[in-house]
Amino acid sequence: MICGLHGLEMNEDELAFFKEVQPWGFILFARNVDTPEQLMKLTASLRAAVGRDDAPILVDQEGGRVQRLRPPHWEKYPPAAAVGNLYKQDNNKGRRAAWLLSRLLAFDLLAMGITVDCLPVLDVPSPDGHDCIGDRAYGATQEQVATLGRSVCEGIMAGGVMPVIKHIPGHGRANVDSHFKLPVVEESFETLAATDFKPFLELKHIPMAMTAHVIYSALDPNNPATTSKLVMDQIIRGHLGYDGLIMCDDITMNALSGDLTERTNSIFAAGCDIVLHCTGEMEEMKEVAAATPMLSGKAEQRAKVALVGIGETDGMKEADCRAEFADLMGQLLLAEAGQADADPTNYGPTSGQNGKIA
Image (cartoon, rainbow, N blue to C red):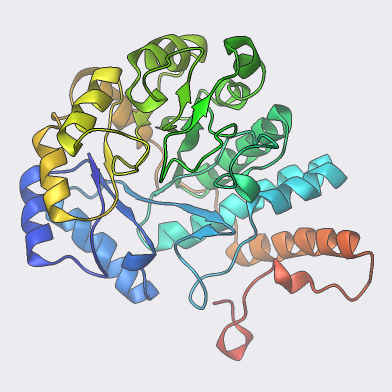
């Protein structure tokens, strides 16, 4: 399992629990982040708790509204849609901007001991879909989403951080937010295969993926992908040919039904390799842990493969990366504004004291 925690440091109960249960990894949220010094201490203490220097620590750091490391200590990054807008103006610049954005995220994260970023969002948004995806998407077509998603994966891996493609096999048509309700998508398999599923097919080599809490009624009218053995076997592992490590989206989201024991059992019965629990609520974590098996077999093999390459970087200089990204995004703003006084620093580095990059 992957666990969250409550605050800026582990409390005694969390430390004892993590030592006993030995979660595969951890996930952090804004509630766990204050300063670089605090965050580095936290990530080191989590690994010490389980006695594994390679224990993965995850975060959702996309840019835009989904960003856990924030100013003033970290840069404010644009949402995926901004990179998508640049791509529509100039394909090469858009791909480069997507690569640079994720490379910058890797600079930020690896320095803090965070080794997995839950991006890119490969969902293709539908015009009538819920805004829970919205500007987190890289474009409105499967081709653009797949192309920029590939660049994002390549950029973050070049920085020694591993990506997680989400939300497999596609959340873009969901008409409600799965944090609160269960979305039901009624399109045919043929339509889904030609659109929503395509980016995941194109990036099936990426070693980690996160599921969608979405029912595809043409495939399994009773269960969302996360708990559907049919979707897991026939679509994700079958049609898409995905053989990487599959983690569920947060098990506490209201799209799922049943108590946490029932949810955990259903998630593993469907074929997920890892259960993700995000809230940090101790009693919830204990219930999930009690129903969660130890990693073994194919799941354990996939987990080992998922960690290969962490910490290995391309040697790019951070200042060069930031300057190039700021220039590209500044060009976008100028083009959108149609004027010479647009401020490229909107999407560029955030200045700290003495003009240094914060």
